Image (cartoon, rainbow, N blue to C red; front, side, top):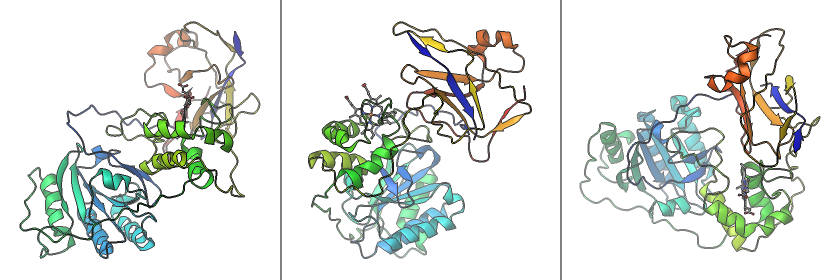
Length: 422
Ligand code: HEC
């Protein structure tokens, strides 16, 4: 028997929005997903949030194309003229990433398009290994595709295709394709072949990949929550020597999408705190293993590993220092074997007045034996003595909880939840 002295619950600063899951629309093969880092640091995928966009345009921007700034200007005006209905994803397959002017151009374009700060209509995506570019079959600097809400390919062509004489950037041939999709019509057909732009060149030289500069930042953000000392994962990936021994296995599990564990399908519900590797990060793991797991030079300012799993009296709250901490009234015993029924415990907050909660976090004091717990708010009409017995029937009462590897849910900025006094 293992005795759990107590499970701690804290209140300080958050929560979840009730974004409901959409049912699966019948669909055949969608356009292959890609997942890349945008020039503003966001992680963007074609599938992620696709339900929110009736049209997605995917194009290319490469510095080898002398016209690339003009191309970006066209993409920007396309997004601007149909703000809110079209998301334009521009992939940059250059080893060095997009140049500074291009990044500034995209930033300025988004700033002009209304609510683009929250939901960029135009994204410039770094694809330094040209993985997504090749997966999509892009071979020239003006290749472009138009994808519908169900992620089906509506049209594939060139940015400069069609009538060059069209008046204004937004009414190029691509613009008319997008408008056809928005109107539920068939794509217009191109009159006459347009001259092709520069052919893309994919740099075949191998980029040197090593632990400190390339892998540690990825591990820190994507694996560290579980693979740290006393974490729930089997090894400590902050220990560089231990980690390099796992290089082939890490390449395998990341390549197959097994790690980090994340089974939500991005097509159906955008999730906050999503844990998925970008195509570039997967490639870094692959190259790291292939090139013999070199550590590289250890920078002098490697940030320390995150705090280890909490112990009583030294609880590592991820929400910061809580304003209030409540402890379960009695330790819960967890047998080493067998099936456990749900158990309930009543916790009295004893608040002198109503409180407005920004965040709520539950921490087990014995994470090695705690699978999960759910914290429910007892409805006003349920007497205390009935609360444990009725707890599984409470609707909309979930305050928060804990499950292995999950992050704390923060309430949306500006939102709080009321906890009544008493
Ligand atoms: C949410 C927690 C969590 C995250 C995040 C996570 N892992 Fe894991 N990982 C686990 C757990 C738990 C296991 C053990 C699974 C098992 O034994 O079945 C595991 C197993 C593994 C294994 C296999 C070890 C073995 O012996 O079979 C590798 C390799 C691995 N993880 C690498 C990674 C990498 C690399 C990342 C980040 C890109 C990552 N994990 C992110 C929880 C996590």
